[in-house]
Image (tube, rainbow, N blue to C red; front, side, top):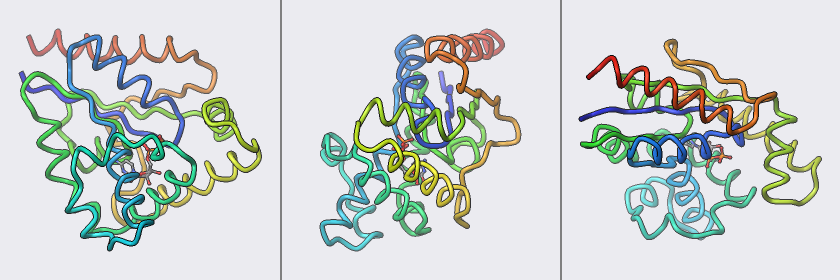
Length: 200
Ligand code: CDP
C-alpha cells in the first residue's frame, strides 16, 4: 500500500508529536524533514558549501542532539531558502513518501511541493505566542528571545521564493492554539482512518 500523510506548518506547532503518534498508530514510517535542513545547516556552520552539504547528507548526520537547538533551527531556515539545497533533498523525500507500507512526513512543503498527491494533508498551526511558549518549555532560555526567533523563522519560511511555507489548497487546517496535543493527535488520526477506509 502506498499512502502518504503530509504534515506541514510553522515552528513548534505540534507537527512532530502529531506525526510520530500517527505513524505509530498506523504502522507507517516517519520522516522529520526539518532534520535534513538542520543537518545541512550544521554542516554549513562547520564550513561546508550549502549545496555540497545537502548532496553529501547521510543518515548518520541526523542523530545529533545539537540539531534541536534554536541556533540549529535558524541555521536550517537560512540554508532552506537556497534552491540548490532544496533540490538536492527532493528525491530522497519523494521516495520516502511513496515507499511501500505508508509514510508520514512533516515539514514545510510536503503537501505543496514534495508530495502534492499525498492522501492526507494537514497544516498544523498555532499562534506565535503559543508556539513560542511550547518551544520555551522544551528548550528553556529567555522567553522573549524564543518568541523573537519563532517570528523571525516564520517570516523567513513564509516569504522565501522557493517552496514558501503555506497550506496546500486541499490541506485540512488544524489550529492547535486552544487544543491539547492529545486532541490534535486524535483529530489527525481520525482523518487518516477516514481516508484509509475510502481506499480499501
Ligand atoms: O521543529 P521546528 O518546526 O521548529 O523546525 P523544523 O521542522 O526542524 O525545521 C527547521 C527549518 O527547516 C524550518 O524553519 C525551515 O526553514 C526548514 N524546513 C524547510 O524549509 N522545509 C521542510 N520540509 C522542513 C524544514
